Amino acid sequence: MLYLLYSLNALLMIGMPIALGVWLARMLKAPWRLFGIGAVTFVGSQVVHIPLNIGLTALFKAIWPSVQPQPWHIPFNAIVLGLTAGLCEETARYIGYRWLANKARSWRDALMLGAGHGGTEAIILGVLAGLSFLSMAAARQMDLTTQGLTSERLAQAQQQLAAYWGAPWYMAVMGAVERLFALVIQIGLAVLVLQVFTRNDWRWLVVAIGYHLVVDGIAVVGLQSHWPILMIEAIVAILAVTSLAIIVKLRPRDEPLVRLETQPALVPGTSDISRPASGREADARDQLDHSKYA
Image (cartoon, rainbow, N blue to C red; front, side, top):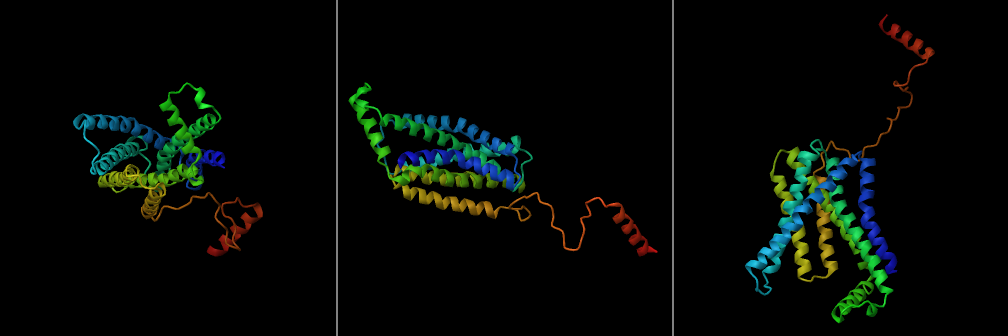
């Protein structure tokens, strides 16, 4: 069962954003180019975000080299890590709207940009989850005592294997569930940043950064405080529902939910005026016109 669920978890993490992109392209006619721009904004944000966090960690260790963990460390870490995530990702999203997609100003454009941004994160994590599964599956078939590991490394490897293969079934798909929630949140953030341009108000960028800080900060507090994983995911689910409400609330009234290329239905008893008239129909129409104005 775990073999199946771990495989499904990785496939869902990779497949969900792609399926969402397909749906947005078909139903809303959102261009795939925006999915790619969203991907670029995510990668670009991490190019800055990851070194920034590493540098801040080294700086804080240099300032407080021997300080023991204190109760205030968790909220401090939550604020700093949430703020760096918000600043890097929402600034990258702003740059994407401002220069890479300077004509993307509709609600559907924001959905596709958000899908590309959050979807790229999901795909990368899905690939890593798949590689981890393959590694754990291979290690399970090995005799680790013959691999030349030190006693400490051997104990760690055995502990990791036991935890991985002894996890409850629902934990095997928790990565996909979390990515689903995160994808909704990322789209909500993309809609928030769009308001900077549609409303000509930079304060919406501050709102997006602040909301991102709250989302990531809560996750940091939960992980570092060792909250139950289901409790953390329940909070993330609430944030995803909140983000969905933001997406719906900020949809312009004149922006359709779907864009279907269908021919308008004819009223019974009428003819299709866009169809070329036959010769007999044209003569009858001419006679009718003459009778009107004679």
